[in-house]
Amino acid sequence: MTAPRIPTDADVELARVERSVRIDAPLDDVWAAIADPSALGEWLGGELHLDRPLGPGAAGELVAPDGSVRQLLVTEHRPGERLAWHWWDDDELSSVEITACPDGDATEVHVVEVVALARAASAPASLASGTIEAIDRTWSTALPSLAARLGRKLCAAPA
Amino acid sequence: VSLTADAPGVAADGEARAGAVFAALGDGTRRQLWRTVVDEGPITATALARALPITRQAVAKHLRVLDDAGLVRADRVGRELRYSAPPGSLRAVSEWIDAADAAWAERLSRLKARAEAGA
Picture (cartoon, rainbow over the protein chains, first blue to last red):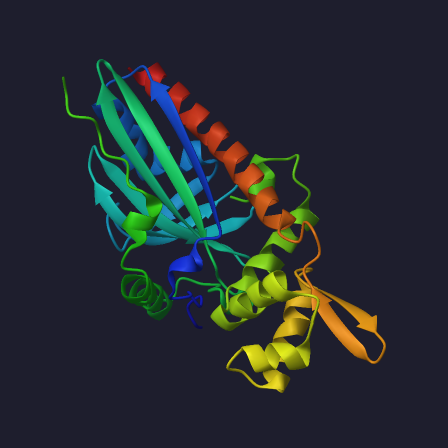
């Protein structure tokens, strides 16, 4: 099983979506719903199964109610600040970053999803450890500027 | 989770086509080839092979993949096939963006409802 072929030039980004939502709840409560795999899976729209606690390298799958499966690899987790992962199916691989910032008694959540280009024929179909390592290696070596490409959103300094 | 599950308005064939486009453009050489066709088309495979550091055979192979994904179109002019990029050939990408955007709207709405209910 081979990892997705990830292009190495700066033009890898083909599509991007960004969305923000203001949630009338404190950051701790919001992050609890982001960092708990069960809650995360629920609001993502499925059941999330990870092979280890949420953190870099945690791998698993998100199973939708219709049975479709999306593989997922967590790349970063800074509690209360940022959660990032790659996920993919047979067709494409994309990268997601969720950031949260306190805004008074509320919380501003920002999400960015960027499509990376993966060949359908070589997309991984299982979570064999070698596959995950290969993906991780590919991303860490080929795309060192992923964070920059995702356009990390920083919280404004408190007034 | 599939985009179609979260965004029922998007046809499954649109998603499959997006996959074909992503796959076709997932190769750096093909991206370069496609851009040359976009910039200089209509252009023959021979001219493409001259413009790029790849063989005529490789050009033909990559053009077939791009053609299958709907990213290039071949028109016969006399004895030559001339390749060009059809208008809207990246429509699948915009469809993916629409679907992903709708999916995140739903997801963030669920996150908001959940967090606010627990607050």
